[in-house]
Image (cartoon, rainbow over all chains, first blue to last red; front, side, top):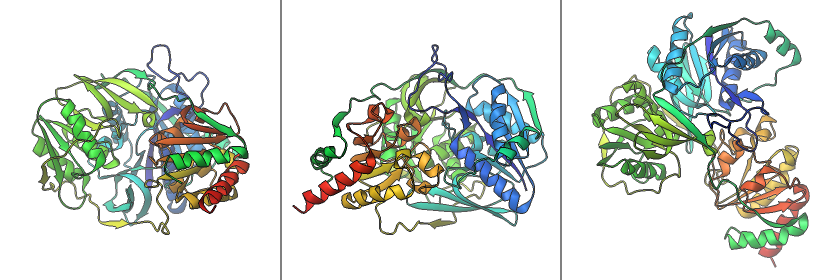
Length: 249
Length: 278
């Protein structure tokens, strides 16, 4: 199996959203970076499939120079090789999907192309689906379960009250959700091995955005002044009074 | 004119999407699609029924999926989870609603989903049932339901007792389970807890877990990362129990108790028992 995982570098936002002075981005001076949680599970799943049946896991990202760090992180949990489309600008979903589809066309065909269900930051819910259309492949989204066997994928999509099941032929595009598996922590030797794995970087030019970000805004009224009911176990009586007032106890 | 894809006439998020559609001005028509769910086939039916109209859907997983298929079929931009439209400009949510983006949608036709709980629900009126197009053959062939063991689900619970890093271990959740049982509540947790393997991911409340809207959310030993707030900000009331009085969670809380949850949670349980059996 040849599997491609598409990932996106995003900041680890912590407790408060602070914007840059031009309101174009989150202030990341004091923040670390990661990939979206859904994507971590996508990479883990791809690595498990290849560990049990052989093949190759390739990781692709579109992002700034620094996003090489995230490709190396994916290599540390078992991806074999990386493709980095380098651009320091933020791309809209349509342009992102076009660039990814173009990069995939230049590669040996993949059996499975894996995305996160939606990115942690922009949350556009569409890049994987657009790539599937560009390549003429079937796509199933929101997977919490995946079994690949005999050239087909059994996909379990999370829906209210359970999971809907799809059975699609490979090659296919899937988008996955956190909970699909519990991703491993990379070992130190695996992190060292990751540094030596092949990573190909290509500069890409951003086309004009059709969904054009103008500015970011921290929502108003998102901070409250909590009523302190007390300190330590002595507060329990007040807590129960509040529960009774709220009609839940 | 705007065509609205509704999951059903009484679906809450679909009714909110109708309100977004009405805010665009012009006539609004509600449609849904018959038969087994087939994303590409449903989208094709909606594209055909819409003609050159704008298309709006609910900000649910299914609504976002159908609209993404619609946008791919039409090769038009699609703005997911929109909370306001002003001409060709709009506001949409990012980071699970903890950040907003103001954006310009280029082109004459709008493809949008409505951010959950950004709009009051409207009456769906007559909903036209569309026949699905053949699409690409990708459709739901089976459904599996988890065994909840008769417990109230996280998404439906009126009270959620949720634990974070401060709980300290998988075993530490026993005191939360005990309190939850008394309140007919579901037990939730933060992402740190599922990543550590203390609880299954199905218990996770957050941007990448379950989004809950109980009458009371009790956050025990949870620091209040945006990832978690995105999942619990729909709660009508939030009680935070945390040893660190500077914890971010208190900025999102209606009620605060400061101190060690390992002492406070059992004390609340005991007090509740007393109140129930005086």
